[in-house]
Image 1: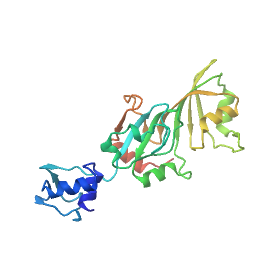
Image 2: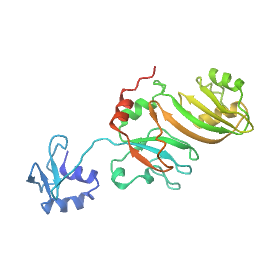
Image 3: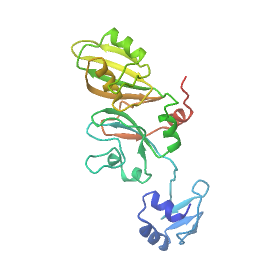
Image 4: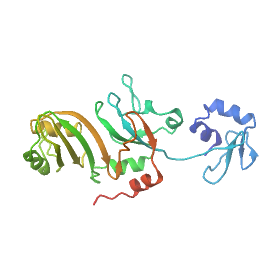
Length: 239
């Protein structure tokens, strides 16, 4: 990788600003001053320092966000704030993207990364990665609904969903439920309840595959995944 691209990707300035850094002699590779912006460097095997401090390089970034309502799951938008807008600039420079989408008014677990291979594996319809949601429903959820979801329901466009595991936490005029599905159709959870004559008034994603929402994260907050969490995702196999 070119040294100027490495420094620019890590947020040390534009290509022009990075060239000025190099000309100043502030950058060293293995204790040798580097002024040529075109010089190639392997950050995985060589030590790069800026003003005497080692630069920490990583190819991929893995973030867990507790997505707040009112923010869209996209990299950019001309009208609404996106989940990427909530990231610090030092994380934005890795050009990450949300893995899948949560509706604008939906809260909860959102994985953000620049690892396209992992994202593809988690989103592939062939993988059937389970996603679990907590929802508040505006009517009483019954055992008949549990049985209907277990068989799959027919959505408004005629699509017959794959089976979903519906658990009733609290039943009443407003019911609390958990629902696990293995698909990601547009507004799927809401449309599944509409198929049985009910309406979702609150929705939160709790987990995706082996990754569970960190309950210490406030809405809009995020953190890097631990090495263990990354390994769990990379090695995850649906049983």
